[in-house]
Image (cartoon, rainbow over all chains, first blue to last red; front, side):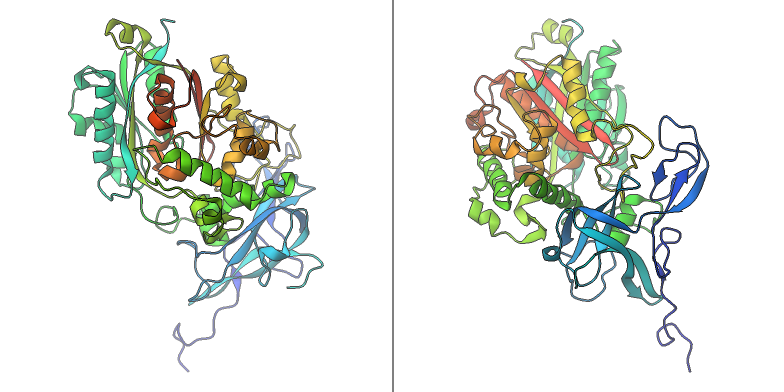
Length: 154
Length: 395
């Protein structure tokens, strides 16, 4: 059997970006925390703490809260331009949510899980982090974090 | 008074989708501004260009590009990039040169030629650039962010899609009489609500297009204007180019997340701080304004700006709109030019176009869109990655 790229089984699914989130049974975003002042950053800060009152330059990796509440939401009814990679020949609108994490006191964007539209969402709604397909190309399936409403079925 | 910097002349190349070289638009605008001021180009001591990043190397060195196109004279030069705030930054560089006593006459120019469709990040594989990554990982375009603010407004204050459409209809009416506007078409609220949804709850005609255009401002010391008999000048009372304070807990384009507030005291939200700094410098407040030109990247965003520049308290913008306060003839007309709704965005020219409009209004030269008795005007705008932009001008 040929081993060339077009006929071989796709490589195993992998994060579309390394080091931003875990893909275990309880996936979480990976931020970091300044060891001097305690400020949390996502994506991770590097080299210097961005709190102007802090001279810290060391960070420890931290998993962000897996649940939060929707701060606001919208969708993409038209296909975004590159470097967005379409998942299919015909664009299917997808929803995007900005989610407030209480413990970190920050808002984090993410696509909304497959199967949900803006009609399923409201501000203040509780959501949790999941990992799903971003797109699949010749190198296999690429994964990204998404927000999924809790207690609602797609 | 003698330390004042004044606007001696303004000029624009009409906005459109012409597809020609941006330098042409800049030169047309510059010559118009020089003619308006009655200043000979050879007397300009400083050329301040607002850069475009979509037109190759000449765009990155816009000051020199425009200076060469107008004819080398040995004038000093600067080129500034601050995304949508580039024009205000270029104006501030020129003003600082005059305030420092290094020159008396400066020419500020911004122009752009834009591609069709969504503004996309620069090409290439650049996973370290958040502006690239947001498209790749989220499919988040500029309208995504505008729509998040719009939906938030609906949830917090009960704003409706109809309210947003009414902003767009107002600006369409304002722009009808503006010869420099790209779109001069009357839209009913029903027309707008029938436009295709792009990023729920925002529709196609409610989201600012990308345009070609050019704008220029001649600034001089007040002494120079007086010595050379340039009358009908407008004083620049403030230019705010502030950055955000930490921590910012409202999501901003092109970021994935806000700052975290866990280890710091709350601060003034960025969009509120932009005009605040301008008011402080000018010694004026929102109650002194005759008009405002704000950055209506979307219909809904104009309502946010009413609150950010202090025209009303948070949650009251819809009432201001419905009372007709922000329509020409009302208490505090907003975007009498027609705003971005009627222009579309020509990034480096846009903050200067706002200054052009306020200048015409304060001189009483705005024709059918004139705000009666205009004495004080403000512009407000924000550039990607944290560039504030607000200018206060007075008679």
